[in-house]
Image 1 (cartoon, helix red, strand yellow):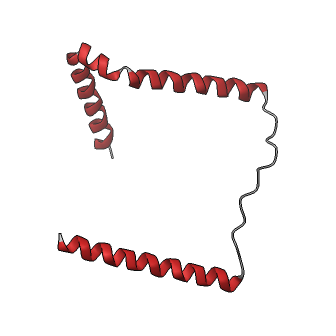
Image 2: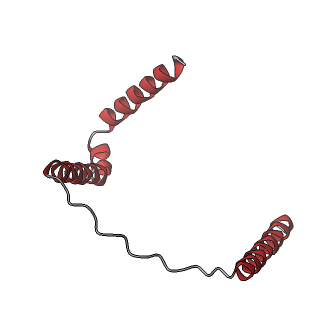
Image 3: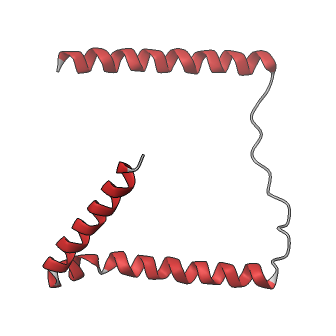
Length: 99
């Protein structure tokens, strides 16, 4: 516990030192951060890009739904879940074993 206090104090000291040196450097160069400018107008999307974006959005929705229902699927089919996890483990072991 005492070590945590010492480490925390040292980290705070280093953070203050870094902040001070950054302020000095910024003041010496006279450089003040300007707010980011708005990006230029985006180029027009081609029909293929729009279709790809729509397909990607559908895929993301399906993935979200899959993970939202995972708990129900595991509780409804526990043996199937264990077998699936075992097969994935075997596949990973096989792929890593070839290296």
